[in-house]
Image (cartoon, rainbow, N blue to C red; front, side, top):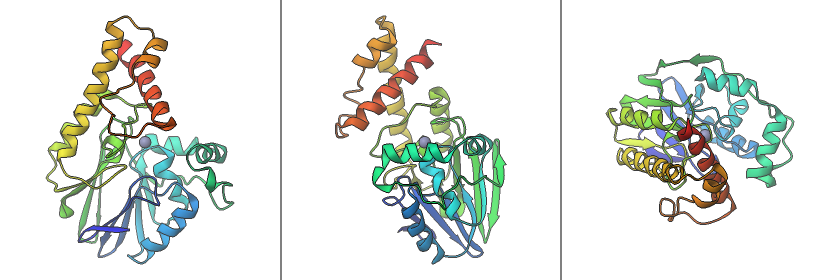
Length: 270
Ligand SMILES: [Zn+2]
């Protein structure tokens, strides 16, 4: 885990998302958990050195942020929509996700299970622990259930996948207009440090970059609709070439772009 401020550590490599730990006088708060069971166990070992786990927070409903929950103690806190997504998940789904994203991690170990969250929020929830405040705020975007974790004492916000660095945004469950509004809400927070859902720790400049990326994607798909393209034509012709030119071309990139074009086309057609 990398120490990024006096009381905050982030694990980016083993986790497949950013798993963060805030150390307080009364124990630690973990934000998002590693996807791969063997890595989750390693990270849990590192976390144990920092203090007892009091709370675990999932910032969103997707398996790359929630699958390691079962390896941690403490009270699990999520958006109510994330709780529903977790309760609806089957071990078979997890097996499918590993097959796609990390086949070398199969088979799924016997001790893996989807853990039901203990406490949920719909709009806001504040946790006070050991001299730290954790303001959990539902800021829809990447999904309707995204939760920002704002920790004023550390001047830090954990954004979920509403901000990603060195990666593409995933639109499959996105509300693009709400996403742009949410990015304005993050701007209002008095922070120096921004921990994105994936990628390197950054600062407030990330919000404007993220908004530009979303707007550029929307514009490109709207352009295809204006030209009268069908969904199938848009899926073939819209490739966000200039927007993601800095990212390496590979099968995953092609797959995500196609998924994103599909979602944005259907969203804009409504
Ligand atoms: Zn996600």
